[in-house]
Length: 147
Image 1: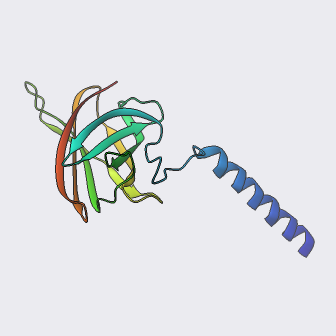
Image 2 (image 1 turned 90 degrees about the vertical axis):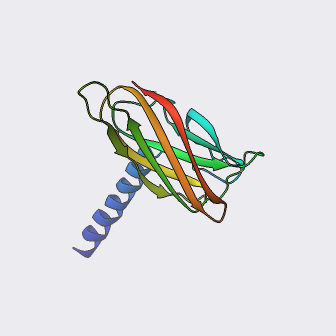
């Protein structure tokens, strides 16, 4: 009975490991290579470059995972402390302004954040990015189109 339980436990763990490996992108951001996936848009904040990227290189209508990276002139990740990412679509006619905030989580690389967001509809959006921490304080907006 104990051997059966142990065997089932080991097979379950092995199956979970394979599942996790299959679901992950396989690469993780590093200080020297902080930008993951394909670039959607980049812009400047103070003396840094901020890059929004995804697996496809596109902003989509609906739920998605993005990466937000802050880098210096040499392309190395910079720890900016607390960061935020909001997607804003201005009011149009009778339609009210929309704001879709992304939930940011840190990665193993300071200055690189994983973002989960649900974009409500296709069309023109503005990515509003802010940070505050050891690298100072910064704010910028990047125009984007969700497909």
